[in-house]
Amino acid sequence: MKVIRQLFPHFPLRLNTVMDPRQLKKLLAQVKNGRVSIESAMARLALLPSEDLGFASVDHHRSLRQGFPEVILCEGKTATQVVEIATSLRKAQATLLATRVNSDIAKALKRWNRRVVYHELPRLVVLQSRPVSLQGDIVLVTAGTADLPVAEEMKICATVMGSRVHTVYDVGVAGLHRLVPTLDRLRQARVVVVVAGMEGALPSVIGGLVQCPLIAVPTSQGYGANFGGLSALLAMLNSCAGGVGVVNIDNGFGAACLAHRINLLGEGA
Image 1 (tube, rainbow, N blue to C red):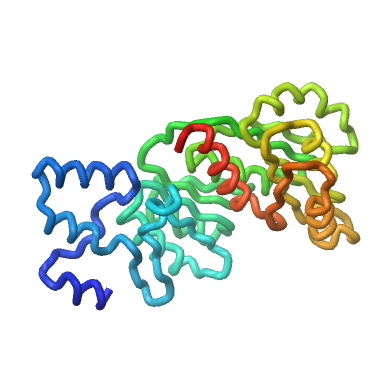
Image 2 (cartoon, rainbow, N blue to C red; image 1 turned 60 degrees about the vertical axis):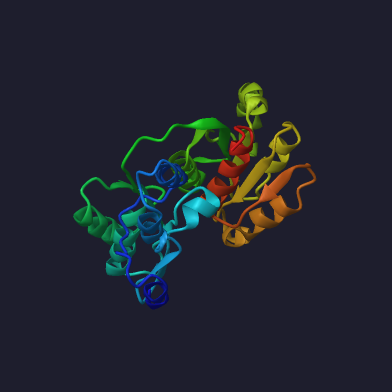
């Protein structure tokens, strides 16, 4: 903040511009048409990179670099810290997404903004100012019902980012016949995400049946020798099916980010 003030001492530094790509293009068009001065535009852009809160450096530039604003990981943070970060992000972004939200932090965020939506199963908080136009085609598959918290985290995050997600739940290898009726749908997908715990075999099965990229998500669901998801992770990393990529254990958010980016490649984004 001090450096920015030294560089722009006479500009009114404010975070009142929604800095997603659409709004930035609008601002540049206004400069081009003479409706906004270069000096005013520079002042509005001055705080784009980050805002120092002391305990956090909030990244206001992420949506321009990566297509989606910074997401708050709430684990390890106090409710007060999360609310302060959320306040900073909402000054410059239209969408707020927070992951791994416990009930206390969810209550604090709802007090902060009554339009906050808390998804209890995947522990997500979403706040959107405008509807999102969904694109592409992601098919999300789970091996079992116990994998739903991670799967729902993936689905909601990808949907908030702007991807269309179709779900196929509880079709694991203990009853593989349940997968057969969905094969045509899987083969139509632009990207498939498979969430599985226990021995983590389902991504290998589906990976050998589809042509599109497949993202495997190991979960920590399973008995003792599952080692908290390690056995599923190793099985997926050792898959003999081609085109299978693997994210970390219980990382539905990471799978959503990767699937969304692959999905948008087909949209020319």
